[in-house]
Length: 386
Image 1: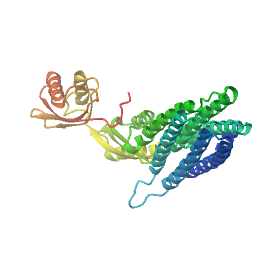
Image 2 (image 1 turned 90 degrees about the horizontal axis):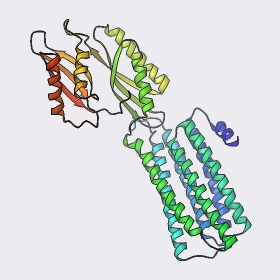
Image 3 (image 1 turned 180 degrees about the vertical axis):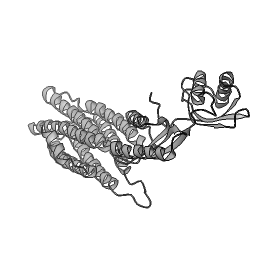
Image 4 (image 1 turned 45 degrees about the horizontal axis):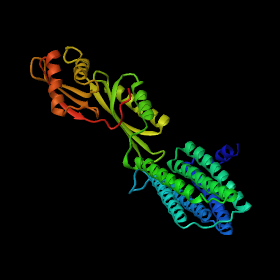
C-alpha cells in the first residue's frame, strides 16, 4: 500500500532522520490543505471552512515543532547534559499536544460565535471537493504518522497521528454541515463545530498527560520490566534480583540498575564474570546500559537451618505481598544474632513500619528463636511482576 511504501522508504537506522522526514511530510500536507481551504472558505463566505484552514496551518506549525524536537533530541551528550538530549522529543510532543488544545478551543470559540451570530454561507462544488479531499488526506496522514510512530516508538508522531484523526473529524463535521445547509437550508455547521472543538480539547489534554508522564518519571513498561527480570534470573548462580530501576532519558537512551543475589560461597571472580555477561547481554538485547550490584547471600549460618527460606516464610505470614532482600546475618551462634535485611512493602499495605516490624519479629521468635530483626522498609520503584 502507498502509506506502507512511503513509511518503509523513509525508514532507516537513524530515528532522528525518520522523525525529521515524517515532520516534513506533515508540513507539506498541512500547508497545501490550509491554502486550499482558505481559498474555498473565502469564496463561499464560510467562516467554519476558514477556521478549518487555520486549524491546518496550526498543524503545520506543530510539525515544525516536531521537526525541531527531533533535531534537538539527536544532539550528542555534552558536559551539561551527560545523558544526551533525548527528552527534547518528549518536550516536542508536549508542544504538539498544547497546540491541539489551542486549536480545539479556537474551534469551539468560533462555533459559539456562529451560533450567537449566524453567517449565511454559499457552498459550492469546489468547497465540497476540497473538504472531501481534506478528510481523505488527514486519514492518510493519520495512518502514516501511526506507522512511523510505531516503527521508531515516537510519542511525538503518535501525538501527530491523534491530531490528524481529530482534524479528519473536525473537517467531516464541517463537510456534514455544508451538505445539510446545501440540501435543506438548515445551518447546523456551528453546532457540529462546537462538538468537535470540545472533543479536540479533551483529546489534547489526554495527549498532554501521555507526553508529560515520561518527563516526570513514569513507571516503565511492565513487559520490559518482566523481560529484564526474567533475563537476569535465567543466568546460572542467580538466586534473586530486586531494586530494579529503569530510567528513560529519551527514546533509545535508557539506563537500568538492579541488585543481583548470588551465593556468598561462590568464587567472587566467577560471580563478577556472570554479572558482566548479564550487563552486556541486556545492552545488546534491550538497549539498556545496565549496572548490577552483587548481593552475597549466605546459604546457611554456621551449619544452621536455611535462614533465607525460613525468614521469607515468616515475612509472608505477616503479609503475602512482603519481599525481602540484602539479608545479612550478624553475630555468632550462641550469642546475640541479628537478621539484617531490607523489606519491600506493597503500596496497598495498611500497617505502618512499627506494626510490621513487631509482627515480623513475633513470627521469627516463633520459628527462629534467638534471632532479632533489624529491618529497613522501602517501596518498590516499579510494579511487581510475578
